[in-house]
Length: 63
Image (cartoon, rainbow, N blue to C red; front, top):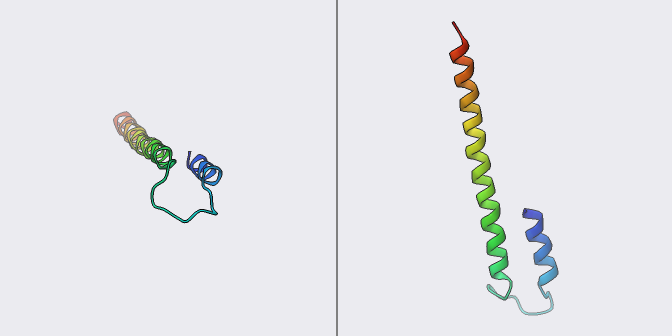
């Protein structure tokens, strides 16, 4: 997803125009950023839950 943001930026930005902070494609870039952040947070919480479940299953199987 991060690569998609870079590709979209390169294809949609007109480098000959003066630089501005906001243009027509800013909304698309923000949507891509939010998608990447949501996936990253979901991955972190899923990974933490899996490692916690594994540690519980190992400790519960000990005599």
